[in-house]
Image (cartoon, rainbow, N blue to C red; front, side):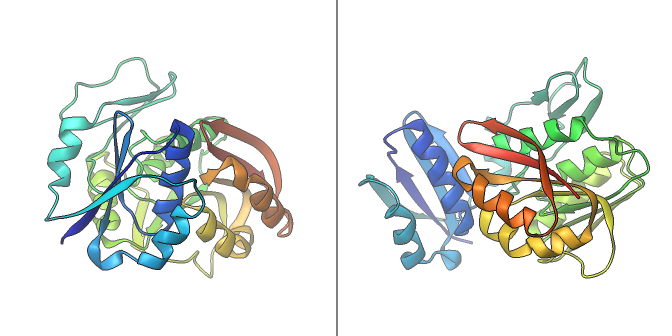
Length: 269
């Protein structure tokens, strides 16, 4: 699979964070930061020029270059750049080629490939931080947009009785299954799907995706939620729209975390 590579020159760090969020909604699935340059990747088949121009129109004139590259060795890239992530003494995430982590309650081993959710991004970190304050023992959990499966794996390690992890992306499904096996998960089921299951209720739903998907699926998420809904993948500027959409479905905000331009929200029914 060939990719387009875009090298952007954001005016500020915050602008770069906002650009990542908007490009991710348009199918960009890899990002790097090299000094003041933001590098973004998208499969050529997924690139939409009109949607791309609509994203750029939200910013002041931003310099960028575009190039075409052949098959990226994502595994090699991750191994050269990936560092363990630690959320206090609660959870640590590492790759197999790292030494075991010390002084954390839960350790997760992730084989990082193209999927999002290694813990490095602010949204994944905040989701895990919100999870720390919830009792998962014997709970039924849905991880909507599982990526690497890291949140589903953490839910099982925290005592969940059953975890359904779904994602629309075939690569993510393969990666999540592999990571569940590495972490010896016995109660995680990974399925390819692009919508909240029409049947079934869940004590806790985890949804770290993006604004458009969350808004489109809020009625289904609320219907399937018995108590807790944790969401992220959204910017500070999205808070009002997200809280309003949740309130319309009978959910109220009980906690919010902010990191850089990103937020994570804990809703309850």
